[in-house]
Image 1 (cartoon, rainbow, N blue to C red):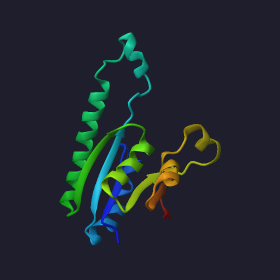
Image 2 (cartoon, helix red, strand yellow):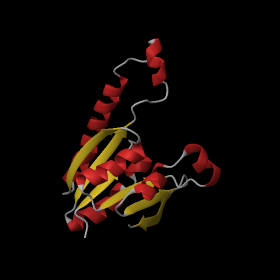
Image 3 (cartoon, rainbow, N blue to C red):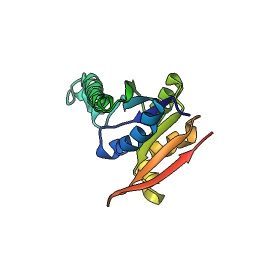
Length: 158
């Protein structure tokens, strides 16, 4: 059913909460897992780089940290018998997640979400919502709550 699953991670426990679900999907199907992390080209405060307050190689450092982080997660998943590869992309998260799905020919995007609604979603935006709207493949979302991880899942297919 699924041959390749893209899993976006941002380094947070919330994002990694999708991993047990992904193991249950990818493992039995022998699907390849593609871990992706996007590094935004301009982070808050980087505009100060021109004033000499932020080193100019900040993007390179963040990119290297992203590679290191994904390698560690990939190692953990590989030890459980999963086929894993990683991708670090430069750009805005939602755009890069969908682009990775297209470029890798994935069948599914699996990710966790904060589950924000109303004004909080408007103010903070939602990477998950943007991925859901623009992806051309099914998206599995696991909504995590502040109190405890909720095992509520949402999927959509195109």
